[in-house]
Image (cartoon, rainbow, N blue to C red; front, side):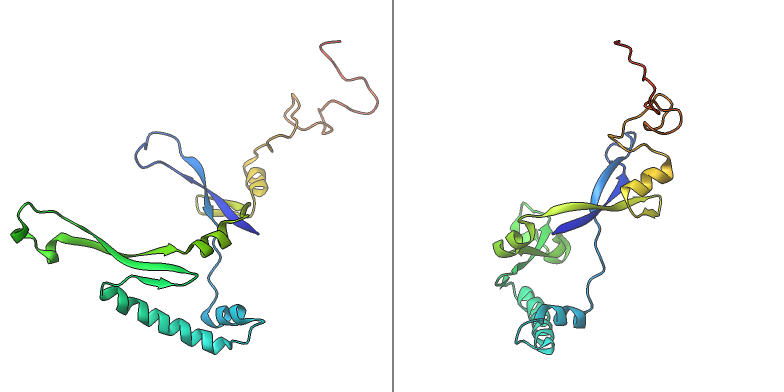
Length: 181
């Protein structure tokens, strides 16, 4: 299965005077609505979509409760959720103030080995377009055409076209010029 990507031009924030470079970014589709997701996930199974929907809602309520109690939550086959944060340090333990010194709390998800392997094994990538200055080009070929850029690898003639176009060599039966004889 191929994953679509878009090419996006960005500058390195640490090297603002250098020219922008093209980077691949995932071309993410909108997520399925919950009902569509549960129908698709339970297709060809004996589980009813409403059962999966209910289980997902229970899990979504359970995970925050467990994280707030300081637990790590392992969802078998999916991965582990845990709470983490940054903290300022103090030399004197009596001067530690949690309200002021603990910062940036966040939830970290670590995918299970089965999930990672199931997604990443045999993964290939397919160009899904170019995004430049708010304009979304459907493909790299469309972008090149709109910008008047040549296709890499296409043979070019001195006049700028490809062989066989007007001004190119290799016409009808005539001998083409060969500087080596």
